[in-house]
Length: 352
Image (cartoon, rainbow, N blue to C red; front, side):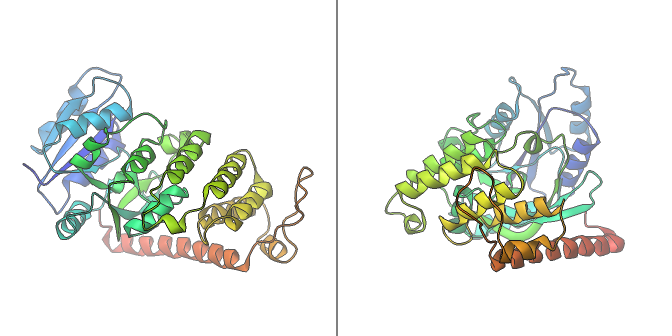
């Protein structure tokens, strides 16, 4: 039995897939198998079969059903290891990824899902922005419930039995099969992230997460999970009561159709009804979205005079807290310093 089974579903054979496979084969941790689950429309096996001829650790599986959920489940069923690491066909694993996750699993045997932070890059591996996630189980659970970055699917390693015990991946949330799995694991699993950036997460228009934005089904599912959270849980005191849950759910559903400053107003309303920091990620992203078309001086107007409501609103002006302005400024600074650091590292020899 190998230490880790890496499951890599793919529906296309292209240079991105070859790059992803190469990054797994360059791992410093060598006790693994790579299961490439072929989900292509083209039934000819030659392209993926050639991959298996390059390294004895590669196994090619043919998914009997099309789609990422059946492909993931096929890989998990065929895995010969106690741990399964997910890999996407357009991402790049850093050389220390598997070794770092394996070492953490050995020193924390009760942890079922172990992930890491990542760096978002474009198709040419040029840095875009850091992807930060909380490190400890309680923080990860809260982030999942409030739709904040919590676990990066292609950066995680999971205990195989934990996935099987909850029925594997399911198609309940189209385009968000990972969120569906995390929510089903919440009552029984322990989560963790390591602080290192062990994955280059490729952002491009064709990726599934870009084609399937958040929708009402996902919002409803998160709040349903929140409402059923065990009352005796250590996190119960940090979660809203039934009335607040309904209020937050309705606000989030309204946010899906809001745009511009109206959407930012909804963010501030959400923040006022939730624990401190729960929706900071919404505010930061929407401040950036609005400022992309306006002067940065608009921040000063929002903190002093507030955001003007729409004609249908009667709640007056909502001010942007100074804390949120500082948070946004720090985020911009971190994006820029991350890009600079990556470029400097690249000149010395990029660790691919």
